[in-house]
Image 1 (cartoon, helix red, strand yellow):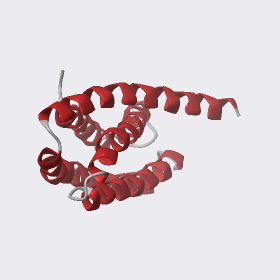
Image 2: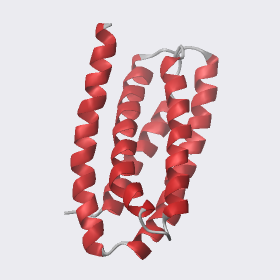
Image 3: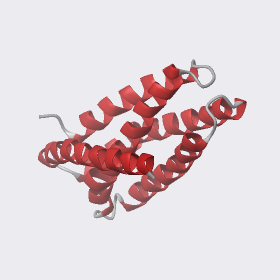
Image 4: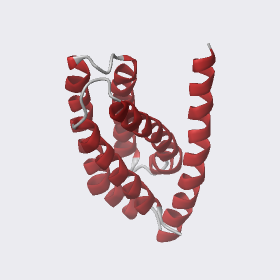
Length: 158
């Protein structure tokens, strides 16, 4: 069983790949839509599960509170940009411009998590805790993905 740091890093690697591939798409293409959907829904479920299984635990320790709050605040900022992009015309020149902002901000966020947040977590949590959080993250991410899918289906029906 992998720990929370390995789980998060694995997702980050997938997200970095999707960001790079998205950046090379043009217009309202099927490639852009498919890659965006994969990225959008995976990041949504990743962030929700991460906040519940990692940040909430980090916030419980006085040494981790500031870092956890910072990470959650960045999640909100990134989510706002993602929602904006999700509603934009994919063929608009502004879409790619705004996407590049998202890419830059999200890559910074992932780097910061992997360098600073993981180090803070390792100073606060035992390796047994990290394994437990990793297992919980995987199950929460699946549950969050189902919720995101249900919400998307409901909005299509409206």
